Amino acid sequence: MGNKLFVGNLSWNTTDAGLYDAFSKHGEVTEAKVITDRDSGRSRGFGFVTFADSESATKASAALNGAELDGREIRVNEAQERNDRGGSRGGNRQRW
Image 1 (cartoon, rainbow, N blue to C red):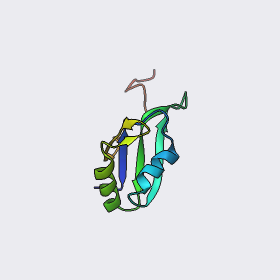
Image 2 (cartoon, one colour; image 1 turned 90 degrees about the horizontal axis):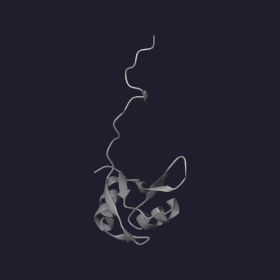
Image 3 (cartoon, rainbow, N blue to C red; image 1 turned 30 degrees about the vertical axis):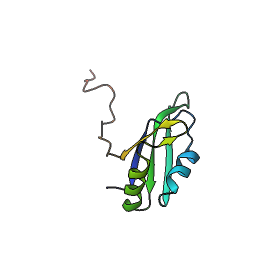
C-alpha cells in the first residue's frame, strides 16, 4: 500500500484541519486536503491524506474505513494514480 489515501463521502463541513486531526491519530500525516470546487469553493465531498510511511496509511485505512467523521460514514481507500488526460480539451481538431 502507498502512503496516500483517498477519503470519500466527506461532510460538506469537513475541513483540512478536521481531516488531519482524524487521521493523525494513526501516524504521521504529511498532508491532509479536502478537495474543493474551483468556482464555488465548496467541498466536493472527498479528499486525500498523505502519511510519512505506508504502514501508518495501512493502519489508518483499516481503522477509519466506515468510521463516522462530521456525521458521515467515510470511505477510505489507497489513492490511485491519476491518468494523464492530456492538456487538450477539444480533442484532435485540426485548425485550418
